[in-house]
Length: 198
Image (cartoon, rainbow, N blue to C red; front, side):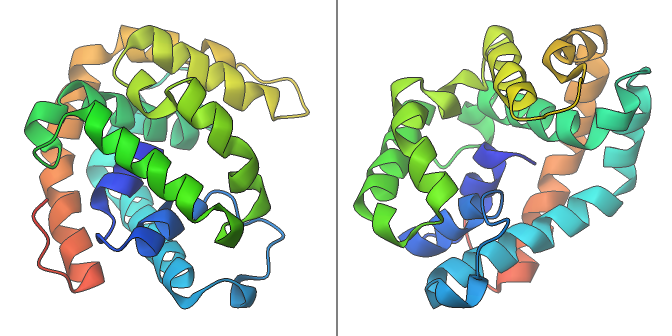
């Protein structure tokens, strides 16, 4: 699961939610120096990742991808699953539009920016300006996300072309996501101890 899913599954407290997003931005960061709420969110993020990585449905999704994309399957599937979450937000969201959800996240990011890991702080302006969270809903948006990700990798990688694998296996991956999402929601509620309304 990528950023949208982590935000959607996070407990409602703003800093815990932002800690879930921070999980991808803490390399080299002293976690003990972060607020307890951010630390709790990062722990939640990591628990979700462990469940996702080990689940047979996700492994089946990864096996659908062809070389040379299979070695990138963990990254690609995180983004692809966020696509289906965004596409079907009316079904899997929190009762608001995806735009309203994203606007709340942007506002929380800006309000709490000084407490966040530096790499996340640096990403906040572009995240709002380029509507990263909303862009998951469109195939062109997935292409743009993968291109941005590929530019952060020093060695040559076909990651930017990964969207072709989403298109090639679209219906099968959509079915995998639809089967997996309720299981992830249930597990997340168990992890957090919050009753939640996912």
